[in-house]
Amino acid sequence: MLRTARASQDVKTVSQIPKKSQEARTWCPELQPLILNALKQLGFDTPTEIQALSLPTTLRGKSTLLLAETGTGKTLSFLIPAITRLKMLESLTNKRSLPNRPRILIVVPTRELGEQVLAIAKSLCHHIKFKVEGFFGGSGTLSKQKKSLQAGCDIVIGTPTRVIQLSKLGALYFGDIRFIAIDEADTMFTQGFENELDKIIRATTSASRKAAEIHRQVMKIRLSSEEEAQMLQRSTPFSMGDDGSLQFLLSAATIRLDAEKIVTKKIPHLKIVKTDQLHHIPTGIVQNFIERDVLLDQVRYCLTKVQKESGDTASILIFCNTRAGCSFVHEQLKMQMFVDGQLQALVCTDIAARGLDIPQVKAVINFDMPASSIDYIHRIGRTGRAGGRGYAVSLVRPENRILAQRIDEAVRRKRSLEAITATKDVLGSFERKAMSTKMIGGHYKSINSLRAKSKTHSKFKPTKHLWFEKGSDGRMRATPRWNV
Image 1: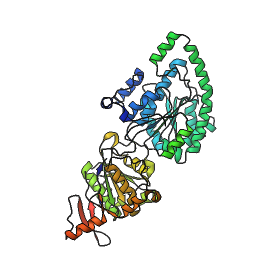
Image 2 (image 1 turned 135 degrees about the vertical axis):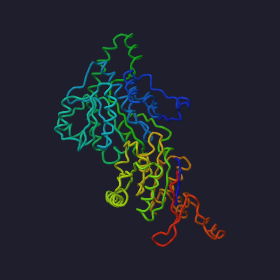
Image 3 (image 1 turned 120 degrees about the horizontal axis):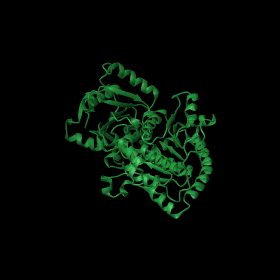
Image 4 (image 1 turned 30 degrees about the vertical axis):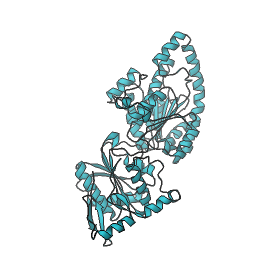
């Protein structure tokens, strides 16, 4: 019952970087000293894999889709080039942000993720003297947000709905925007935000054409002499072919093929930069699959084990598929286990699975199995951040058994989870195989082989990974111990 495991376009992967550069990465030499000092003061002495891969492309003005596993620094991967290029643009044009006219727009799917990106952007821009504002539903009245824009800001972070609202009110103009970042791009383009993003992209693209023409004229004047042109090319991250047009920077921890096609269709000439661990489970996360029987007893058992392994102050996320499921689990556990406040747990839906960086989360429990392997990656990616250690437990119902088996097999074979699905017409023979297997000791074993073994062994002897108890139907069942 228990499985434990550790888990046609320009495309770059980490495997294309020499091994030595992976072990001792350094920041891109095109970065200005001001940016480098800001990063070092914030504790970012070396870039992550996705940052090392993407910066040579993004710093030269190329619209880029950044794909990397959770907790690998994708936020800085789009903030650094946008801020660096904007700072250099200021030095070339002597132009500052005007009221209601920001120059960088960052679009996020939720207020929670937006506030997280806002905190990172403010920390970085504090050293660079750029003003950053966040505009989300529920984070302040429209009148206050209009006043903030009127006062002037360089970077705006907001949800699509609020950005469009402010634009319609005349508080936000797109004419000066030169950089657009879209976080969690796979979610944004496939889960209800597509129409709003279309409006934003059309408006900013149209406005940027005039800005690009002005930029070309300014650059033509500034680069009147060959000597100055050579000097600027050596000292700036701008290539001489950069016409000042709009740059898109998109990021995602997962992306389906259909979503990738939508994104590349909406934004032509998009470069794709990805790590070779995309759609893989982080190696520091120990995973367990438990067939659901006595539901709350198993959740309490998992929580007790996490508390024992990680300490009394361990923080845990428990995922349910519905709000009703969250309410049920929360009320039961609150009454039974959390009166003393020794164990901290958040019961939530998938809204907490996308993009949020909560470093202190020690474990994730899937009370309900997610609908797809992509959602599974996002959920358990909330623990084991930045190469740390984490625990993931999934309670598996009969209808989720096929998906759980495929994830289990992919992790054991160190394969990508990208193509895994629970759709019956796709599974075919694999489904028939799943129906003829049983999870014993964490491995799916053939029922026929188990029957053959039972003829030679009068009694099944439990291993150290299992302990037996009587279920609600009176039958003996094996329940896993927390395996680390």
